[in-house]
Length: 223
Image (cartoon, rainbow, N blue to C red):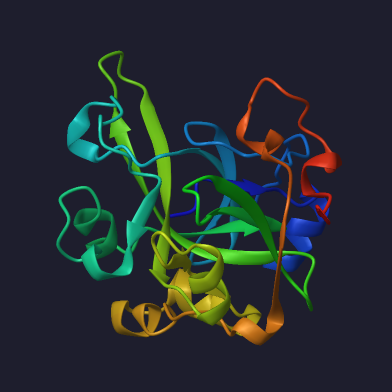
């Protein structure tokens, strides 16, 4: 699963995803965490929105579930109670990212975080779904989950305890994901080519939210 990622600068993300409606206003973050408000693009015309990361089903009355809903596996989009309704309604979104973190389990059972990014793009989009749920005070809560797919060769080596990866999209797939029919959209959900991705070990400080959230979190470790 993907439990932490980094944001790109808002204007750069808007250009990369072709935002035509709205604008994002958020601080640059090198450690985006579940339950935070995160930028997503929704369709069919790419529109900038902020939503809670961790999908709250419409029937949950705005209350987050006890089970984690930050990641929706591609295999359960059409069957899981939390995800099948937004999937059937075509409520798809794209998470703009500059990179993400995954844990690697060592021989001694310790874990080291790795930072993963693309070699050919500073900003990339990850497929997601979104939902709205009406809270007891009458307000709507908007939330989202990113989609995961089986890992490619690189991510299988890095994320060795559970070989999964976010559903990265190629730039030419953004429109199909946001505005295509269900079959067209689902066809985009494939492991991203490993040869265009890079991964390296970073400090375990990224796992401690109380520590500074800055560019030092993605500095590579050499020892």
